[in-house]
Image 1 (spheres, rainbow, N blue to C red):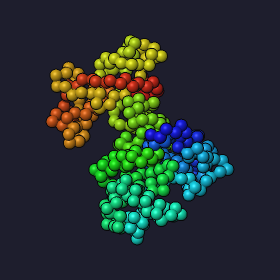
Image 2: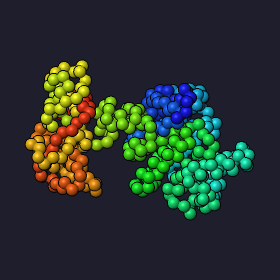
Image 3: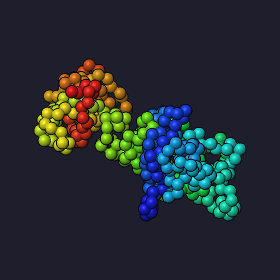
Image 4: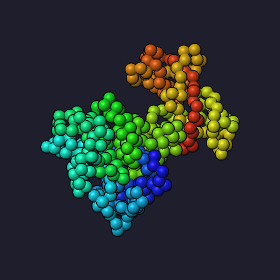
Length: 358
């Protein structure tokens, strides 16, 4: 990561609307030099609109965008996309079919001289591992290679910031996973600051240093993947990130919670009085299958995943939990299985009306 103290990207309380309907609401985030950020959310949450405002394709309703310390969008100012020093990788790659791989990468390097242009194209193709394919045309290489060509083309002008719009969505699952890790390695090797949008949380986890979970045009939490999973700030984030259930619990003593999984101990919000009812986040890895356990749960349904099975379980308390179990432990819906709690993070939320836990 670069030693600069000033962020490469700053969004300060930006808003955007279409037909008088707000699609981005008072959104702020910061990316330091060399960081990879991600906006994660379902379709229609506003994430692509944020990307388009950063790129200069959409004006702001209010707020301010800075790139490398320069204000590029604010009230009364909108710097053109060509002057923002950004690279862009589109969902469909947007390669020119009539140009070779080399010429596709060179396309955005006009005005810097032939020798420098040649050097940058070769460097970019080496970086993405495609120098040997430089004489081919896009239709002669695979989808994964096309994606890397699009990345090389975006990196060749040495942008201050790289933007990527659902960059892996056109690839099959196995290639998507492999290529997402490759792209992260390439960006880190090049020290590139980048922001991408996706609806796939596993892509976000694999690539990004910091992730913004978005809903309704707002960022619910801007954090590392680890913190989003283990320290979600709200039930909404907890339900969106990863898998798991919220179950009822009662604070029975300092650091103790009585639940349908039994008595659990750990760090609790000590501002809540003894006897308070809360919601406890229980992830699949928090519930361990053990045939010898006296605590039983009924299998409601199962999701076979090859090496493991995700069981949806009903506790005697009426709460539902999930358990990720090695697939040689094969149980069918209706069976009772022994379980043990292994809840190492007591993530709790207030129990509000309508939550079903009061």
